Structures are given as C-alpha cells and as structure tokens.
Length: 137
Image (cartoon, rainbow, N blue to C red; front, top):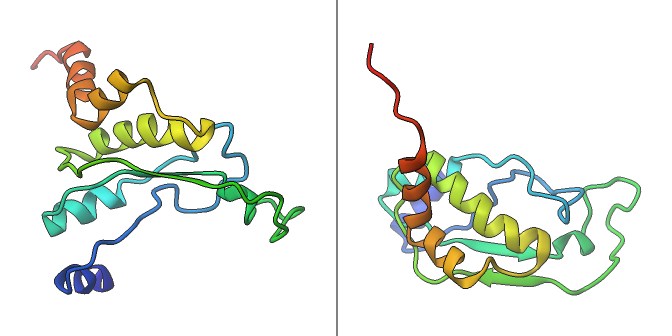
C-alpha cells in the first residue's frame, strides 16, 4: 500500500490484476477475483479504469507442464474508455467479471449496449433493484 500511495502522490496510475495469479485455463473463465483494486481506489479517491487482456497464457503459463514455453504470440489488450468510481466492492467485482471476463475468455467485448450498461453502472443498478427486499425484523 505504501508503494501505491507513493505512486499516486507522484502522479502515476497503477495496474492491478484482480485474479491475483496466472490463470491455467483462461478460455474457460476468470479465477475468483478480489476487491483490492476497489479498496485501493476508494482509499486514494481515484476512479477505476477497466483493462482486459486476452491470450497472455500463450506467453507464459500457469501450468507447470508448459512452463515458460511460448505457444503463441497473439495477445489482445482492451482499455475501456473513462474510469468510474464504484460504490462497493461487489459492484466493482460484478462489473469486472462481466466486462473483463467476457474479453479475457473470448477475445471480444460484450454486445455494445450491454457493455455500456455495465461500464456506466446501469446494469448493476438494474440487478440490485431486481433483488428481493429484506424485511426488517
């Protein structure tokens, strides 16, 4: 955290990979993600700008039987426009899993309307409003 704070104070942005490790089967799904990026963004009062990678498993591998053998060089990087401040770690993780998960596993974005609904927070609000309300005891 100290190094991140120092980087922010010096005017830098930082990149965080919420899966926390290399994914041995990225074409199947993301690994469980962690809300550290949300926590750091909240602490620093900075927005989160989503970025997705597809194909990095061809450059280095989480599977020991493949190791550092390069099996392909086609890697796609997608930086989504404008950052956003998320209201909760759950909102960040749901958005990350939907947006980045699609690109990371398939190499293509969600349909334009669905992508924008996630990136501007409307999809999260729709999901939250569809949840059954908890009765107060």
